[in-house]
Image (tube, rainbow, N blue to C red):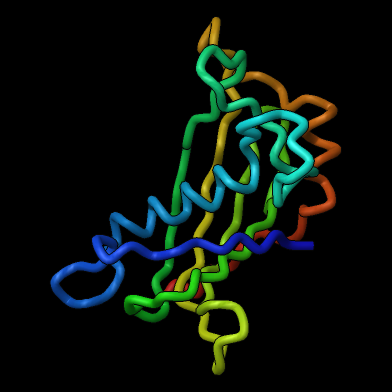
Length: 158
């Protein structure tokens, strides 16, 4: 099972070549990840991702999430689009203190033809804020994310 996160482009996301800049692609992935996993108001019944958005991201949180690795494969340039991109997210690996978040960035929902612009993955390490040491994924986090575990993204390595 995958999460679908709509992400709107900003005019400033484009570069001189009139497509989304590679540095902005990392911001798009970050924004999708935050929407999918971070609880800005724990227990908010109106959250679009009530089952997966469980990480406390508020200042003073006991857990930090650090990026250990990111990889992207660009398949098509993304032009400026008014409708939000459809970011598909899933968990490619759920380890002891880390998880691999996988992404496929598609054209907006209902766009024809549906186009796959990019594949990516991010390895996130859970860290205890007080000690700076890796922290095991909790039973609650594991239970929330296990339904979204499937095979990791496959890059074509052209």
